[in-house]
Length: 158
Image (cartoon, rainbow, N blue to C red):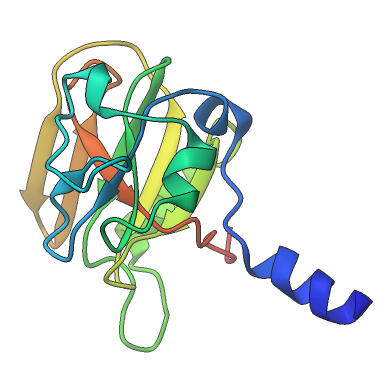
């Protein structure tokens, strides 16, 4: 029984306290649109009345997964198509992971299994989108009015 509990605990996503302690959680549908945990209707990434606590979001039967609305001084670097089919990280992505490793609150694999989300402390400001030389990076500051469909699957090759 102890081994079963240990496996179950290890399989649960682990988010940093700044995220789990905030009521910035939503669920999302199969198309990654945010939905409310309490009634399954669409949520808004700019209306806190449609967000909930981590515990309520995890316990909700609405939608297919969790999402977190950026804020609390936490932004996200969204790296698309940086994990190859072999599991190798693209060199440009490795540079970003290495550059942010010490300040990152969480580096997780995205839903596609081919991208990464790097959650880190960030100043408010304009977001950016870079699409050059194979790099596909979007920067979402904490005040961007965005939410991220999260997996909680830590990137283990940090």
